[in-house]
Length: 326
Image (tube, rainbow, N blue to C red; front, side, top):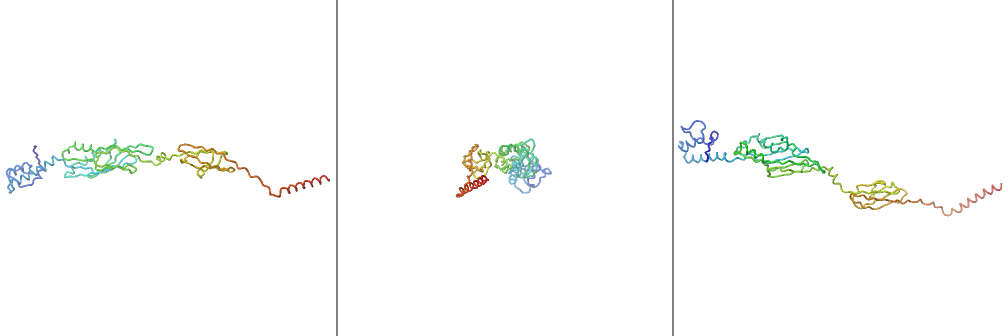
């Protein structure tokens, strides 16, 4: 087993139990204290057994510090909010704990978090950073793709194990350990849709489509049919289900599938009514021949026809007789 020798600040952990005349001045190494106190004994009455126990405990504590890494960094939450341009704001919350909580330099934390969140040629922009949180602007975090129903967003994949490997490969390896995988991750898309993950070592690629109401309406219009109407004579008024639709000849699109009543009206002609069955995506044709209404004959007043005729003949006879006498 290798001998652990700690000097300087490490010897401050050993209580100052007197000083031997042969012990060097200043802050002595631990092994000097062990030599003079454990081997030669104590002048102040402390038993050699007690000093052995104190020394053994101190040595074990120091060995633990050098052999067992302390958990200095723990990632708590990561909230990523994506905007309409595909950029994102990442809010990273973490905990620095233990008696060496400040062992990881802030510049190293900032650098590793920046590397872990880099998704494009432009590195993330640090908006704020302290010993418990970091807020970064990640450009081009999600790729935008136009789709028939709106805009599709595709995020990039994140692997937080890279930051942990960087710590292991640094000079801090063996002294501290770090867990960069957030316990909880939430990704929010521009329309408010969220995806949540727990205890993941990375963020998988996510795909979500933000619906455009106008595009969706154009695609998902209910299926309809068309009624084409001709009439003889033309210019008849058309009523579909008792609602005026226009004049003939004409085609009337956007008619819901099913049975509909069609009526035609034209002054001087009898009304024309038929039912038609409309099929989605098809055109049904209706040809209407309107019936002419003949004018009503003039009726004479009963009892006046013969007298009027006789009077007319009498007047003509009198006029003829007068002319002949002359």
